[in-house]
Length: 234
Image (cartoon, rainbow, N blue to C red; front, side, top):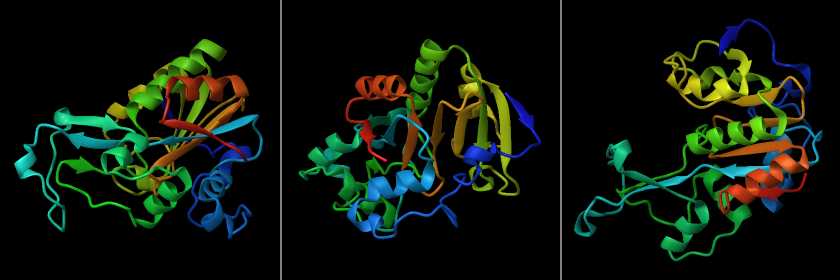
C-alpha cells in the first residue's frame, strides 16, 4: 500500500480516536450499555448493521501444569509460536465464569478483570485486532464488493516512533501487507473504503474492534466467526 499525505475522509475523521472524541454520546451508557457506548464513540450512524470484534485471549498450553502460577508483577515473554487463540466466551468458561458481553467489555476497559491472570495467558491486545480477523474481512469484502480501494489510518500511538499519524491508500487485497511495515506497531486504527459502505475502528486503547456496514457484510462476518464477532445495535 502507498503512504499518502492527506487528511482522513471527513465522514469518518472525528472517529479516529475515542480519546478527546467530540462526538456526543450519552455518558450514562458507559455503565448501563458499554458495548453501545463504545460503538457510538467509534463509528457514525451511517450503516445498516454493526458488530463488535473481540480480540483473542492467548494461552500457552506447553507450560506444564505444575509451573502455572498467578502473575503479579513478573510478566514473562511467551513464544508466539506456542500460543493458541481463545475467544472470550471459551476463556471465561475455562475460568469457571459466566460470559456476559457488556460486563466483559467494561471489565477490559477498566482493567478490572473477574479472574486472575496466569503466567501461561495473554490478555487481548489493545489496538491489536487479530490478523485472522483482518484476513477474513479482506476475503469477504473482496467476495461481496471486489478489490475495493481503501484508506488505512494509523494513529501516531499505533506507530513505532509515536511522532505522527500515518495514512495509506491501496486495495483491500493489500491490507495484510501492512503487518510487515516496520514503521507500524499496532494494527490499523481505521479502515474504510472509498465507497463508504463499511468501516472498521480499532482504537489503540481498546481490546476490541467495532465494524459497521451493509447487512450482508456484517452477517457474513458474524456467521463465520461464532463467539468472536457479535452483532450490536446502534
